[in-house]
Amino acid sequence: MSRQKPFESKLPAFYKKNAIDLVMFGYVKGMTDALPAVKICKAVERYLCEFGLEEDYPADSAMRTYTRICEDFLWLDEIKKKNSNNNLRSSTQKDPGRGLQVIVK
Image 1 (cartoon, rainbow, N blue to C red):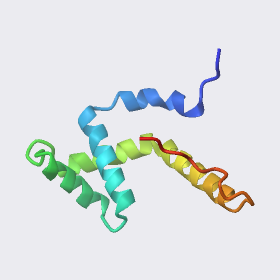
Image 2: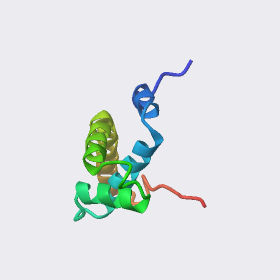
Image 3: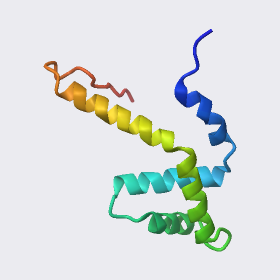
């Protein structure tokens, strides 16, 4: 039997979250990562407006939910940091093609 990967033990918490909250997490995380000048609170407000949830989902509640999800998934940032460190190491090696990924569409 294969060993469980470290991130797999944390996935059940991910599945327990509400779909709307997970979409919000992805939307806000993606927006703030892609556009660092955008503040989290503005990204949350934009998400609520984009999906017509501003009347049904109070912004302060959405912010608390986003913060909770971030705390639950801090291990995602650890993986991201680890991958960026590996990319830095591979880019300084003598073989420039090493560590490159091929994306097939």
